[in-house]
Length: 148
Figure 1: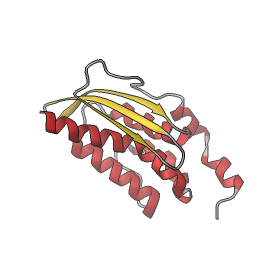
Figure 2 (figure 1 turned 45 degrees about the vertical axis):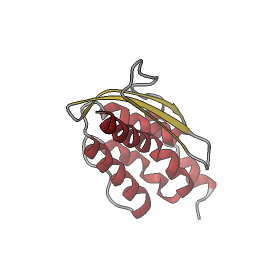
Figure 3 (figure 1 turned 180 degrees about the vertical axis):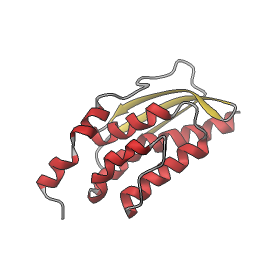
Figure 4 (figure 1 turned 120 degrees about the vertical axis):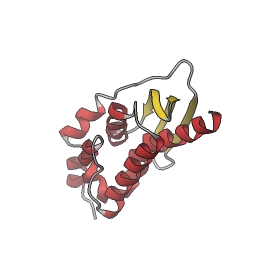
């Protein structure tokens, strides 16, 4: 069972640094697709706008209203989303999920900084917030494919 000390360790300096520096914050003026995801456990929300060109994310913006863990996760996604395909984003999200739930290794480059979230493994109630930006991005990519 996780203790209060474990919870304090969870919010490491690395997590807080990532949370404080989220790229592509805001909304796109003319998105091709938008998806909003909300965590019922904590009320965190992430809205993702994107455009796709030649099967890759060409424009990306995110409105992140989440805890530091959700913000840190969105920060890593935001640094590398532009240029990625739906398959690449889904693979990184699935690797992140496996890391949190099953103890699998952290996602590969360019998303290896998600390793900072490994301490959240023991806090299953935080996993939905950590996955919000990824789930919203995957949903928006699926929507963009339908519109294309």
